[in-house]
Amino acid sequence: MDMDEVLGKFDAQVRRDAVPEAGGRVDRVGGVVRHVGGWTGVLWSGLDEEGADAAIAGELGWLASAEGRGREYEWKLYAHDRPADLGERLARAGFTAEEPETLMVAEVAALDKELRTPEGVRLEVVTGTEGVEVLTRVHEAAFGRSAASLREQLLDQVARSPESIRMVVAAAGDEPVSAARMEIYPGTEFAGLWGGGTVPRWRGRGIYRALIAHRARTAEELGVRYLQVDAAETSRPILERLGFAALSVTTPYLKQG
Image 1 (cartoon, one colour):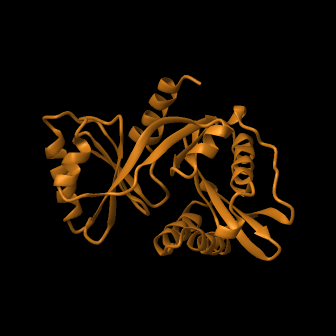
Image 2 (cartoon, rainbow, N blue to C red; image 1 turned 120 degrees about the horizontal axis):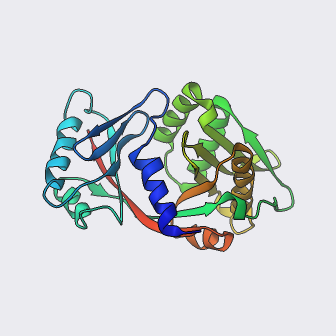
């Protein structure tokens, strides 16, 4: 896999030329691509040292507008974005940086798609509102924080565009112990893997790996060429062993409207 080529494709297809989610829209203003919808924020920017502060001020102005007020807003910054001090400029403008994650990508054709689950664990495809409820309950148990915002976002997504998401749960008996989803990016060669959280007492048994294999199978059936993950440090070593390559680092810069 030519990593520079794939990163260029990702920047162009998923970020710069992004297609809005159902019920949302994409604004392109002053070198900034902003998505407005269930997720609101900056997907891509083509800025230089002279224009960066003005672009940031423009986003702050939009966030203070009648449409922007009250929204959760994220400027999704990548390490290769320019200017090099864009993160520092965002911080000075009042944005709060969250933990960075590694942008990792693999070719679907190259991934091991054999399903191996621990004894007594099965994978179940879930859909609709019931699927969202199960997935977000597992998310809360796995990550130890509220999934209220994610629940609202996913409920809207399955109502407006059910074909854009695939959800899967790992269950031990009647107990859901892990859950994940795959987001389909229409008009691109990419799909995104999200979630993959496992409740503490079931970790280290290969469930995360099985969820990757299941979604890779689904991606292959859908004709997706690349799978993308924003990986936490706990996930990165597993993904590297499975064949994912690190392309960049992404840091969310957050601000409340």
